Length: 284
Image (cartoon, rainbow, N blue to C red; front, side, top):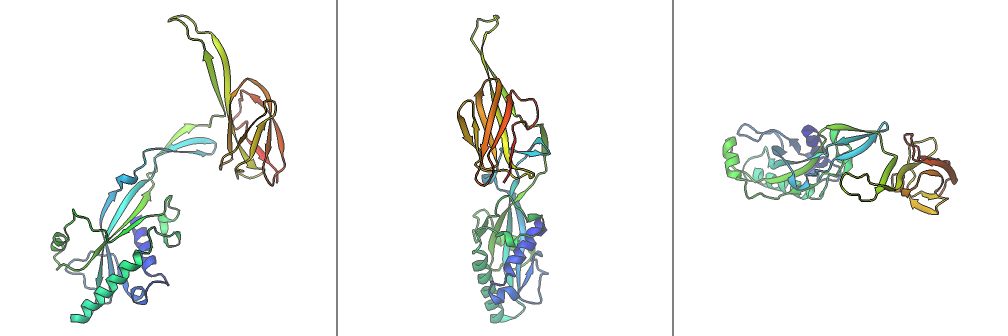
């Protein structure tokens, strides 16, 4: 995935709208040690550190329905990829310094135009990121000593800025949870002395279903669902899901309607016994 981030940054720096000099420069991800001596003007992005972004950490698991079964999976890991950006020139003397400073400034300004990485630049496994990858440009950290960095590489210090891109990494940890619940039974009992049986006051049910377009898996958002016998109505959510609570056992009629679809009456029985028993398909 890190190499896909390299390719993504290369796409940003090579964009047709970028400054001509920046676009014509080579882009390198090599370690800029004492042996690094590019033969042409080069922007080097050295990935020197990868850390979890604890501020963006999400501990709430994600639950999805896959093939009619609930699957619980770990949320993606949010990772800060920290690059040290430098500019290099093959010229000598004052011309070398001028070209490097000019190129570094262009890279800083151009990369700062993207507070998040647009989808059009994402490459490889980064395509379809669950969150637009945020960026931080030229945010120098107080706990980093660039002098020690260049000394460790055996190179003299040179102008540089930090680029941090936060990407989401799927941990691919899934746990099957079982089929979705379409009926929930709630038994209300009178409080009784310890050891004595508690008399049942009432048994009520909660039901849930999904409204979809007939012949497709596409949900119909904001569909109106009414229980005719009770005069109760709800609106389906953006995923076409609806629910009714506090229902007694018995037979009911669901009347389902949505703009652009034919209204449908669906006979149901509470409690239900079949998976997806309260799902309703509407015909355009």
